[in-house]
Every structure is written in structure tokens, then in C-alpha cells.
Length: 404
Image (cartoon, helix red, strand yellow):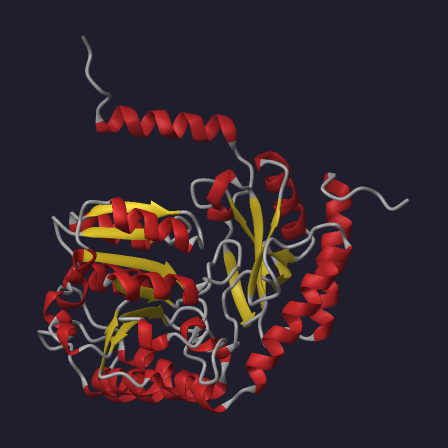
């Protein structure tokens, strides 16, 4: 009796299924951005394209002060660190950025990682192990699930934003709450909805579980100081650890975690993705530091994001494509299936508008969605132009019915 297929056979089978399903059709993985003109404009297939899927919420990846900071750091420290933080990669810029993040959050300590994915791997992997439990919101990012799998802990999921289901699982999982890590996101990046951190944090605090919140998409956008949804919802004192990324609002790459609990001060020595990978390049660290200063001092950009988000949300709703969450920096509209979704996404791109197409398993509940993000760098004309393109292509692909 033949056993399971080997690695190469399994890979060939996947490739054959992919070829039958997609063929030579354009896909998000085959899009090549030939030139980036600004935070919201690029050249794709020789065509200037409006970018509504970049996560550059504040437009800081092209901010002159951030670019100047990166250039100065490159002159002084070179293009890369060439080592991990425990070798020769612990430079003054890295230490300064960690102090800056800790100060932003009003916490004792901060750790920076080379990517946001690594921040989740390091923080979660440094906290839990076999015999512990990880209880995750069902809509959590893949990096969170991967981190928990690597830890060896028992993994359980609760229904999205359902604190009662969380409480039930914590009561029934058979592992003490003190050995349980609950992980949620502040802003969920697929549909664009916010966590109900008030009810979630109340459950974890009452039962004594540890709560980690990933603020990757909410840094710089929510809360009086831009610290994220936990700040905006007034529950920071009930959150044990916050994880985030520099690749969205900050405009570079990298990740971080912050904590105010002295029990976790050794996390830096337990996070393998911190100990065993090269530290962030100095130009990236300097640009991130300058961006965080702008986030702290400039509220106009944040207001512009939500102004554009509300206009875009209203326009999509009027077209008969209501987003799946209230107005925010990221949102999604439902497609009736993979083929009409891909056809619409391709037509939008060919018409000069870039958005993201997401399909299962990257989406919850088997949804096929077109995801968009808005930026402070978008003008009102950009928003209107995007809506016009969506209206025209939606009727062309049948996603929108022709006007009566």
C-alpha cells in the first residue's frame, strides 16, 4: 500500500492544480512594481497606477525628513548591521529606537525585531512552551498562529471578538489561566474591524490569563498618542504585552514589543528571532525613529487618513459595495467568488488602480475580498478617481449592475 506522496510529488501536484486554476492569468504574486513615484503612486506594466493597497497609512515612506535621517545613518553606520544584537549588531541607533518606543508607550522596556512577523515569533515563542495554552481570536494573523505552533503550546481559537466564547474556552481548556496566553489584534487587517478589547481584557484580567495585543495596523492611527486601539479603548493597563510593526504607518520594516511587567524583562534573552537574526539596518532604524517623532507630533496626517477613509467608505456604499467594517485605514469589500474577484481585481489594475485581492485561507469564513487601504498622502481627487475606476470596472465585470 502506497504511503503519502513525497515532497516533490506533492509540490508537482500543487503546481498542476495552480496551473489549471490560474494558468497565465495575472495574480497578485505576479505583479511587478517597476517604479515607485510616491506613497500612493507607482508604475505597473508601464502604467501610472493609483495605489490603494500599500499600508503606507501616513505616507512616511517618502517623507523628506525620514529619507534624510536614513541617508545620514547610512553615511555614519553603513548599509547594514551585518550581525545579530548579541554579536556586533547592537548599535546606538537600535538602543535609541527601543528607548523611544518604550517612551511612546509609557512602558519599562521595548525590543525591536527585524520584521513584524519576527516580533510575534519572538514575543510569543519567548513566553509560552509545551504544556501552556495559546488562545487566539479566529481572525488573527498567520504570524501569530505560526508563532504559537512553533512554541509547542496547545492552540485554541475563540470566535472573532466574542469575549463570552473566550471565557468558555479558558474555563474548559484544562490548562490553568496563569499558563495561558490570549492573543488578539487591535485592528484586524483583512476586514478592517477593531477588536473589542474592553470585554476581552476584562475576561483575561478576571481569570488571570496573559494578554498580548498586536497593534500592527493601528500604530500611529488610534489613541490620543497614536499608540493603538488599546489606548483608544482605555484598556492599556490590562494589556500585558503589545506587539507591532514598522512596515505600516512607520513606512519602513521591522517590529517591536513593549511591556511594563518586570516579570517579562528576560524576554529579550528568550526571543530566538531577536537573538539569532541580523539586527535592522541602520538607515531603517534612523528612518523609523524620525517617523515615530512625526507620529508623536503631527496629528494632521491621522485626521487626513480618517477623512479619506470616510469618503471612500461612503462612495463604495453608494456603489453597492458596502465595506465589511466601519470606516478606517484598511477595509474590504466582498466578491461573489474567486473568478469574479480576480476578474475585477485585474480590471482595476489595468484601469490604473491597485488594491489587494485576498482569498481563503488568508480570509475568514471563506470570504473572497478586495482589500484597500487609504493614506494621508491620498488627495480628495485620488479618492474620487479610485471610486470612478471601481464604478466603471465593477459594471464591466458584473460585480456592479448597470445603472438603470
